[in-house]
Image (cartoon, rainbow, N blue to C red; front, side, top):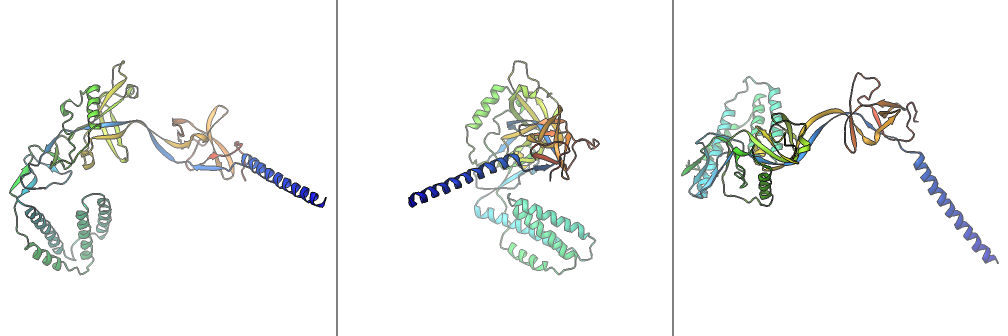
Length: 409
């Protein structure tokens, strides 16, 4: 009997513990439902755009410069250099040793000239130390940026040069003569080797060492009048091909105007006109904004579901010179306002607005939505509207039973 009572007591204890666990879980759930943590977001200005996202084909007027393989070829231009008609873009040497000796000789000569120029500067020269310091800051930035490029040696020397200039300016002793003597002695080890011939270009323009084999896949003169079917055929050919390392020296871009061709739905260009201007942004490089003129495709026929939009640009740099196909955003219209999460937007008495927290009190701010996406809206900001949303308001993005005037403690 005693053993039976012990078993019953143990069973009751287990039941009580189980009931307390259930009650605890229930209370926690009730608390989580009835006590929602208040979360806010600071109101700030944002800029968004109506835009067309697409993949574009880059068409340039460019001429490939081939390497005939008659010796060791050394390119004598940098990407982005402006080349005159008949100008030299490369040199051909009889052997690799001659090419190395030539490059080394001219590199040492350039360094020697640089140090001799610095040595000619005296402590008493007129110069602004603040300007020198700003120049140093810029050279440090240039050096950091060059780490991802092939110009690191050049930027390193530029930084070193301006640091030496500062030392000279403030009167520090800099032993430039030892550098000059060392460079002069080193120069004597290399004869003034001359290339056996120069490779020149028949056209003037911008030089680039990058070639992909598609330089002439689209006739530059017909880029504006290209049909949708022809464009699709060209894109298919490019997409199914592999860019291989070529033996070309490079290319010369002979016209500053170049084109972006993009196939888009006709519905998306209904508010555009040929001859108008838009902004183009390369995806992945939002800092580069190109101004482009719409030269074709903005006014398709009524029965055309697709249109070949052709944009003309005249900005050119090393990165653009290497583009063939690129994901782009065409900005159509600009909106500026305060960005608000979609779940923070409420309708009270048929008026759209947001709840904001001022001190510990909830206030309802009426807003005018000027742009919307799935997860956010952009609302108009009017600094003269005392009842409207204001910069740095604490927009409530999460809360329960929000009411105008309610106090949270």
